[in-house]
Image (tube, rainbow, N blue to C red; front, side, top):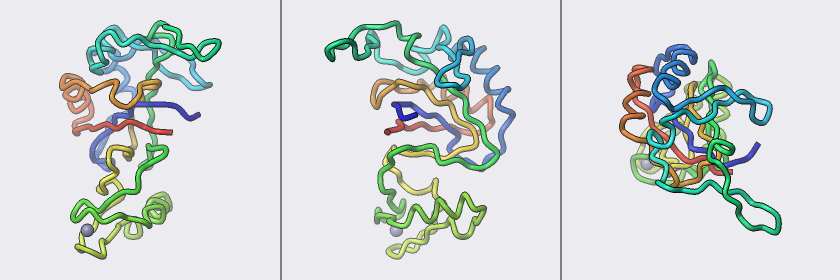
Length: 192
Ligand SMILES: [Zn+2]
């Protein structure tokens, strides 16, 4: 299911994490998550009462969708936006159509990133390390510079139907995520 998403995830995908239900409970209490709803056959959450403020959604942004004849029609934000919590035992590649990553040391393009990610999925930690031919820096896949198009994690909060630039997660939300999981978080905009 391709779509626009804002994806928040722990900065270090290997950091120890609490069970996903701890995160879910904390984000309901915070007001980010509302009741569970079914979307695309999966369990998502409707926006909670403080959703817009916590995510820094552009004030007055009217949610729209394409109607008859290609005109955009205003809709209730709660009808189109939903939040999905993603949890996995293994580190997951969270991006969609990602940019070619670069070495964080010298900026050289990493053309064999697909092989490094495949090694990661195969449990081959050594094979997942990219060693830069230019500067010698060794990087795990999540340490590469993906130019804000990708992330990795075993836990993530995906906010569906939010496009690049439409939201800027607040310091309050970043602080709450870090407190709930005891590790700092970051985010990127998923592109299809
Ligand atoms: Zn380099």
